[in-house]
Length: 84
Image (cartoon, rainbow, N blue to C red; front, top):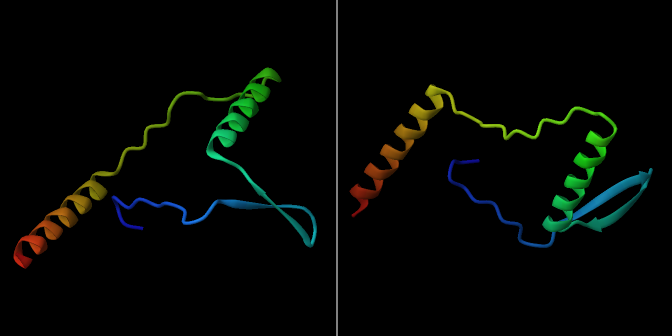
């Protein structure tokens, strides 16, 4: 996958629950319902004393990746300007 790519589903997302072997059951879960389910799970976990870190995780690219992306952008810009 390339940087700056946006992925959008073409159809509604359908999950399959594999509760009984050989008998998958389709179900849909909206974004709102997924967030609600997640929040309820966090609340239930903390209620019974399970540790749950609520601090955001900040992902920081390595210096090598930053340099690679910068070089890629420079090459893309140069290629676009040479096409004009």
